[in-house]
Image (cartoon, protein in one colour):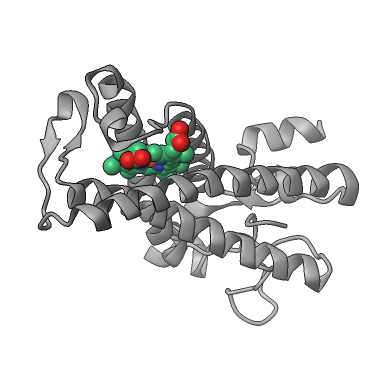
Length: 229
Ligand code: HEM
């Protein structure tokens, strides 16, 4: 499945279930509490295993923001993008894009400390595609804003962030390179949305065709329980 799971690796040690976080006599270590942020253990044992509230928020919030950034994307020539008429759209787009970028970096840090919950068993080829898609999504979620920021600065434009003010270029102007990067940014921006669409279709395939818990695992724990009651 595209990007929802890490391929079911049990990183807790041989034979130990991925969600068993308690150490001796209920004391939790620092790493275990970080793991708990990313994977949810249903105390009643009723709901399917899944991601914790932080990981769920890191998934759905950027998804909504990427869509919004795509919708208000300031397309066209450089003159048009930086015209007074496009100023508002561009500023909204830049704030949304930078928020997605910050959330992606935080999410990568959180994943490094808090591995994903164990995925349901699935054919190896599905797990492989899932891993590749996840890698691609993260790469695009970093490369898309980075090319936009570098492109704008190389063109000599500050980042314009509405009431937050402006961030002046931190690199020397190289206009042709900036324009090329801005062009690459629009291609990557489109690619993010196409890939996210494929990712969503794969989640629905898991849910309705394979009938496994992959989609449920990324829903808030409360919804997971409700689906079973
Ligand atoms: C993941 C986040 C982002 C996504 C999905 C995204 C998506 C897009 C898309 C699809 C376009 C083309 C719009 C069209 O052709 O109508 C675009 C253009 C643009 N984006 Fe983003 N963007 C993101 C982040 C950013 C950030 C952080 C900035 C801040 C500098 C930014 C600045 C721009 C600018 C200036 C353009 C116009 C490019 C040009 O000069 O032609 N974007 N973006």
